[in-house]
Image 1 (cartoon, rainbow, N blue to C red):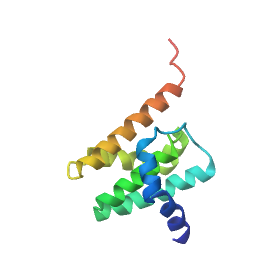
Image 2 (image 1 turned 180 degrees about the vertical axis):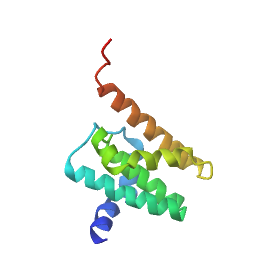
Image 3 (image 1 turned 90 degrees about the vertical axis):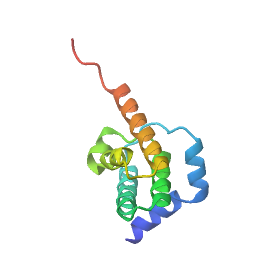
Image 4 (image 1 turned 30 degrees about the vertical axis):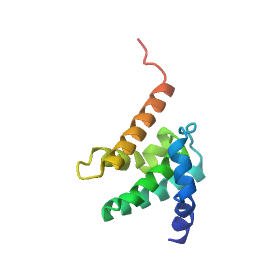
Length: 121
């Protein structure tokens, strides 16, 4: 859709891609516009994965990374974690894609674990 394309295109630009690769992920985010951005990027990621477009997958992963660490609610609602984790484990995927996806999954897990309250003893 036009809305989807309008949101994904600026995030996947060359300058945004280069900036996303060199900066650490920002803090956890969970507002409605961010949730929608994750949804749109998940659709792009799913389509790129189906088409096996390595360049598009990499640019989408970098755009996702530039959004920061999704909250647990965003992960549940969008299922973006499943999609990224699938790429990290796909032996047929290019190593650059797998490495970036693994790094993102690990970063997201660590961020979410650090905010989880300790279990009662």
